[in-house]
Image (tube, rainbow, N blue to C red; front, side):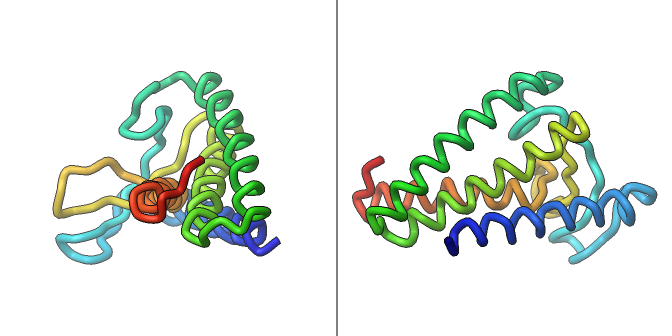
Length: 150
């Protein structure tokens, strides 16, 4: 039950920060945060990671939906078999990130991004993207070091 609550909490955090980006950041476009390190820049991404599949919203919605269903299945299995907590957290993060961006795609036909690294050339991202990246990283670590086998 706790992992499902975790998904909801992360979804709320993602949607609240995106709402902040629309209300406060959209009118001014950019806002410095940590000079030379991190700033806020409002963007609307019609693609997936690194803007791949740009303008293919229906395909992205369908793919994401299928992936979410599969991830839920893996998470339930991991919970029932008491798989290592790293794996369970990974699924919780992946599901919340995927749903967070899916909500934007369905509701707006694009994903709201607003976090920008200033010290490197890197795509602008959001909380859902962070969840997905951390979730994938945890699954990779679990596969390499905990011998996790799907």
